Image (cartoon, rainbow, N blue to C red; front, side, top):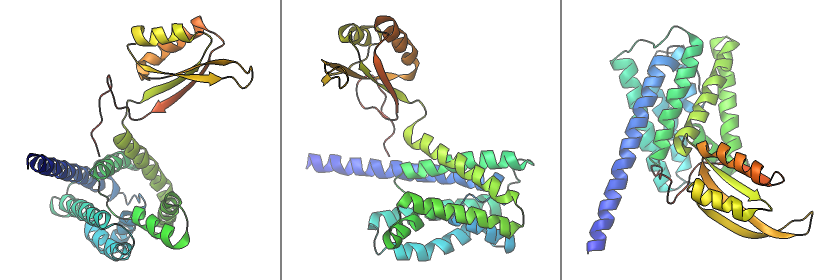
Length: 294
């Protein structure tokens, strides 16, 4: 009984956190659309991009158009996507769409700048942050990601390629609708920045570094990592393909600011060492802060 109560509390806590993430992301997105994207008719791709073009041609609220366009797509996707995905997408889409119209149609906020390039940059930033938060809440806002899944189902293309093709076609079409060659160029800026910001929100800004070291001095390097950097790691038995010699490979994860210190020590200790360095977006364990789950 006690375990059941704890399980229920955990589920409620998880749902509450997801709701806050979806709401926060939708607010940020609504501000981005209202201050920067809609006033300058900047098309970020997806169904929201189509809605901005329809808003340019007809005096219809962008959020309402997003909902109308998403309904048939979600009905189609209900046949082959999980029920949870459809419902969370519906929740994210309706929340974000209503907030877009609330800020733009009811509060009637003025645009945030008179410079179109600044609008593309900051609109992309806010859109990416908002979408990232919604995704962290295990939801979606519909649009091109659902279209990508549908194309994957019926045409066999990968989901990523499907989304990219959808966004490319929609943004390119904005040049014909607005009769401006620069319109899709600004749209590509919005898409690029928003995509990068989604990655930052989902994966974190302060990347750690995974370092793989093959050296003739593994004991000295291991000691430095353990006692000077206060990091841990693993030592694996290895065999050099070129020299056909047995040895050890050291694998460790360090904070980014420690990388220069480690590289300097390796260069001084064993100039012939072979070192591979990779960005690591998430590390779980002692000495590393866990990211907000999502």
